[in-house]
Figure (tube, rainbow, N blue to C red):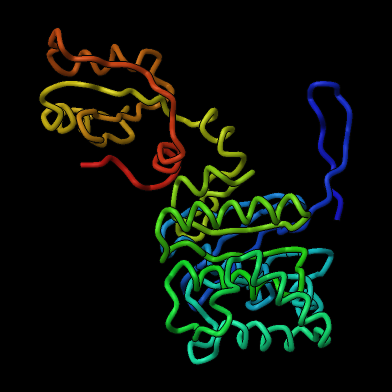
Length: 323
């Protein structure tokens, strides 16, 4: 699948090969629309993120893109395979790491990897070589004879990733893979993802962590099964339909309560000793607007600041005004 785009700088066309191309993808469960008219393009050798809370449609979308679910309507092509018709063919080309640890607790690390390698049809020589490589890469050599059920969250995460990669998939799906691990393990995990991407693997990862979403090359923000926005993290922040004003004052609770009554205010949230206020972009002078709403003291400070990805998420979803 080739995607043609235009380079605005020199007005020339160039081609980017797509790993995923979905159009009007929908999935209903009875009367519940779990995913509605999703359009999605994911370029090869990139990390693409799904950002959203529980129930936003992230897992449903991944299951549709892996062929585990049949769409109610829409078209989807993954690595040149038309789904759901060619789902069995696709499964040999992809890896899938679920949110919940899905390997066997009563098998050792090595036994789990041997089991998965047999499912994918690796020969004895391929299995031996691949297991040695994965155990070393994911720092599991010392735990190779340890029962998986006795491992820490971070160790289980590394084992699950190793199992998903055992057949060298071209496309890797990760469904909230870091939800049960500490920040250090999360950081190390993402370093591994960047290494995989540099080696040619395309990755689609779902998360509800804003810092992880910022690490993606591109992402889609999902809410109630609907894609609210997509693009690179920087582009989403640059094009946000709101301006961010930070207020440093002594009576933040009073200011917040007063501001949340204004129609121009999208959100107001206290962060430590500051109040972070999202003001609609149609407001020409957001600082002047806020100054008119409360008495300014000599020690009070108001300033327009750089938006964060969390600001983008709040501005384009139904989070409403924080009260």
